[in-house]
Length: 293
Image (tube, rainbow, N blue to C red):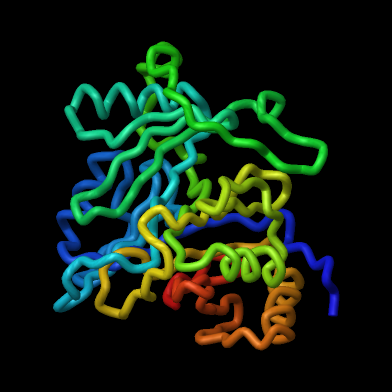
């Protein structure tokens, strides 16, 4: 068995699916932030950038949801903007519309705004700094920090003529998860899926990525240790999709999962789904032409 397996270096998070109670209220909120409705039914709304038909966020209605409780799942969905000026546009808009913010930070490799939607799902909107400014250690570690964001500098970078808040190249930069056990989470994402451990914050958080990025997946225990797994009626994160560049790379991951006896719970011609150790569904795809899984 190959102990040095590495995931396709083009792998990236593409789409996040949330289970929601009030479908239209949530869609209205994300529209306020800058997304648009791409496909809409009574049970599901797919949203993306106003200048692209690329699905970023899927909202799915849950009938008779369970009361909110602490379970594993989403800490935040992170929308990556192409440039700092785009972050300036968003920050100016949020402040001018008096949309409540949870905070704003400089992480060394990025600048980020934090908020949450009406059902408590965490949101990060950020832009990366030039890679030459990242603190990349000889080991490959990308050390992050958390200090106050230079809000004045971000606002000064804004471009008032921008056609939309979320430009065409906006994407899901990463997902940050609330997990039950960091070691089990690391075994799954690093040892099995083949992502690199890029940084860790003591025994509180770890960060995984492909292709030298600072992180595609964050994991922390800040909500609590040994959280229970979510049920089908718990609101919050249902799935996130990890997309690779080819059918060949997809088959490599499938065989890797099978060799570790990871249960594949759903499969189609171009996609499969598994549960990570925290009961979070991870969909692995080699395209986005069929988002019906």
